[in-house]
Image (cartoon, rainbow, N blue to C red; front, side, top):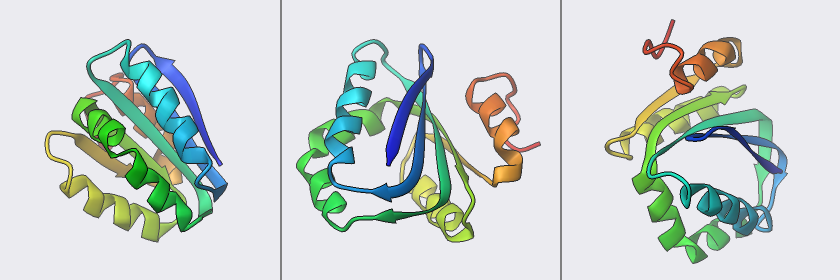
Length: 128
């Protein structure tokens, strides 16, 4: 399940937990799209709890929304990803190198408070 919460006028928190299905994708893309109607740039605090199960059809659903996804990536400024699982942090570290112009940092659960502070610009130090 994906849950989107606005943290500030330019920051969203997206929590991933349990099963992620293709039905989650259009809803989340729509929510982020509405948010982007109010700002030119935004930040995402991505909180991946446990080891979510991702439905294969989700990838196909994402491909249906490529223009909206490109709009989102173009508007990204900072991403702070918090994950319990090491393999998710590793995948995110690789992904961070593939998105030019985005300050993308990866954190453990123990670093969650610092990740939030960095994302919300309470500190400029990415890792404490």
